[in-house]
Image (cartoon, rainbow, N blue to C red):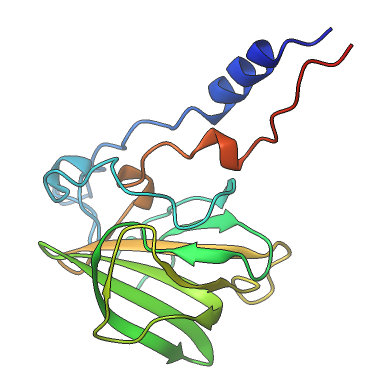
Length: 185
């Protein structure tokens, strides 16, 4: 007989978020171009945001070595095509529209912090709208071109520099990841 408590304990252990990464010194002794250390994040916002969609992170943050270099400037969260995307925190929509044929929503959260949800199939708000934490802002699309799994690309910038979005997100709600059922006989 499998205990629901044991299953949940194992799931929580597997979902444990990794710690906020420390700064990676560049060859010059400073930070890598285009990234900030966790300690430099906007005060009071670390680890408090809601997840824009609930799902596993299928590709992590990979900061570029320079502002225009290769890298992955956000995280990819697996979610079925058409899943509702929610504002991770309150703010003002600074952009809602298409870039290169793909739909994006960027929210200005104040203090130089902006989040962007990319590769959407639909947008539910407009530039200039004030949004509340958890408000529906759009729906997931297929993700990056040539993606094999539908997902949301979620990025965060502080004063124009990309940071790891996981540093801002709180723990994912377990109820969104697990269908709870009574113990099996």
